[in-house]
Amino acid sequence: MSKIISIGTAVPAYRHEQEQILDFMQRVYALNEADKRKLKYLYHKGGIETRYSVIPDYSLPTDKWKFYSPTEGLEPFPSLEKRMQWFNEFAPDLSLQAINDCLQNIDRKKITHLITVSCTGMSAPGLDLQLMELMQLPATISRTSVNFMGCYAFIHALKMADAFCRNDPYANVLIVCTELCTLHFQKENTIDNITSSMLFADGSAAVLVSGDNKTQGLSIDSFYSLVSAKGKKDMAWELSSTGFLMTLSGYVADLIEEDFGIMVNGALNAAKLKKENITHWCIHPGGKKILEAVHTSLEFTNGQLQTCYDVLNNYGNMSSPTVLFVLKEIMQTLRYNQEQKIFGAAFGPGLTMESFILSA
Image (cartoon, helix red, strand yellow):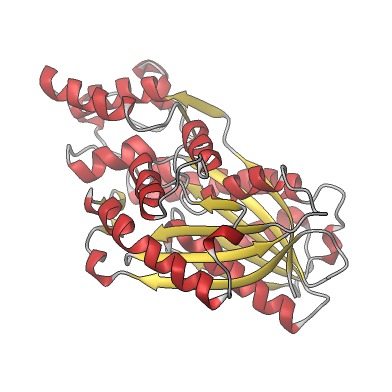
C-alpha cells in the first residue's frame, strides 16, 4: 500500500488583489462603460479575492511593467518564446520552494522517483532535469513528466506514484506540480479569454508518496475516472504563437452538475463505500460555478466544500496544484487515530473527471 506522507505548497512573490487585476483587464480590453460594469460584476461574483503571479504588471502602473509592453494594444504582444523563457526562469525556483516545504525533516536522498506536472510550460530538457540539478538528485533517479493534461493532472501523476510504490515498498516518489497560468493572458475580448483572466493564477505544490507502510500518512485506497465526451469542446487547452489558449464555456458547470454525482456514485460503489463514509471532500476549485455545481450534484447542505471555497478565494485556480492546496489544508486538520475518508476530484479537458479516495 502507498501513502501520501507530506504536501508542500508555494506561490510567487507578486500577490494581486482581484480588484487590481480587474482594473488591468478593463484598460487592456478597452471596454465601453456598459461592458466595464459587466466585467466588474463577474469579478465581484467570482469568489476570488487574491491571486499570485510571477508577473508584477497586473497591479502596477504601466511605466513599471516588466512583461507587457506599455503601449496601446500591448504591442509587441508577448510571443510564445517569451512566455516559455519566463517559465524556464521562474518555474524551477517556485517548484523548489514547494519541495522544501514538502520535505521538511525528510531525507531527500531517499527519493527514488521524480514526477513533474505542468500544462503551462514545456521544454526539453525541462523542469524535471532542472529540479534534479537544483536538488542534487542522483543521475540514476527515475523521471517522468505529465504534460498538458490540465487541472486533473495531479491525479494522473498520483496514479503513477501509487503504481511505483505498490511495485516497490522502498519507493519514495516526489510529485511536483507547477503552473504559471498568468503567462498565457490573451488580449482579445472574448468570453474564453475574459473567463481565463478572471480565474487563473500561478502556484506550485509538491507531494511525497511512499511505499513504506510504517510511516504516518494518507493511504491511497482507489481511483476512478469518467469522461463526459459531450463536453470535449467546452473545455480545451491549445497552443498558439502568442501563448496557450483556454476554452472554458459556461456549459462546463452544467455538465459537472449533471454528471459529477454519477461519477462519485461509481467511485464509491467500486470502493464499496457510501457517501456517508466520506468525512472530507477535496474538490478542485476550478471556479465558483464549478463548486456550486458539485454542491448541487451531491446535494450538500452543511458546508462540506468550505475548504475548497477558501482556497479559491485566496489563490484562484492554479490548475494542477490547486487540489493539493485543498488537500494540504485538510491534512492539517486530521486526527490519525480516527477513521477518516477523503474523496478528491478534479476536472480537465475532455471533459475529464478524475477522482481518488484516501484513508487516514
